Length: 361
Image (tube, rainbow, N blue to C red):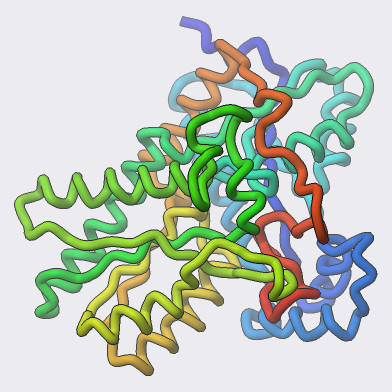
């Protein structure tokens, strides 16, 4: 049976991008903050986080690994559609990738972004990137956010289950689970998802929070079915940035750890369900900052891996590609609108002018 992907000339993995070496850090940060009049001195402060990791963001190598895994899964299904890669803020740039496709005769391409949940930064801005980079004669469709897809859920469930079992083996029978996602402005959270949807009426509301909560609830329910004690869990956030006067989603993961310590909790699973791979926000905000907070509080922490190249996630992502190819569905015009008030947030990776945080979604 012919795959629906046969109707496309290429599949494009679209991501945020990141520096490959220390010399790339400042130019990369300039790309991320273009138009914001942020001085290089401030960007250099943010760039110190990358210096801790040799000036190299993990995100590009993780995208290369995901590309290889996707290629293997496509080959396993005898789907020979070309698979290419483009970034928003660093090479390979999306505009170059699409231009090369068009120059090679491609007329239809299907894009999947490395962002699982709906918001302006996580979805609509990528649609704008595609529109701005698309050469004449090339039709580009985008896969919808996949945070509730079975493969993504299965990969995160397996990771959390392993973390819980490890802590139980160390004498912590009921560890608390903190499901971690990238903080975004409250205004963006409220307008995430289709206009008029029930999620848009909540507080903080929106499909972004609603879908993250669904993922956490499903994982806890599955763990309860394993026969162990019912575990408590909360949705928390990291990488808050921007001016202090602008409200962002809370609680911050570090504040949540302090609260749990005050309640006598001594073991926590940190599950970064809001992220596709272990890029800079995960390895710095969780593995450095949150780990230091937990150690100070006497809390034993296990940080679970992201979906990454987990076989269930990779297979599920190809399922998403085939479903989108069979029935392309565009986001409604009123879905996840561009923020209208205040400074435009940097794509879900933080605004280096507003705090010590770093971009790198």
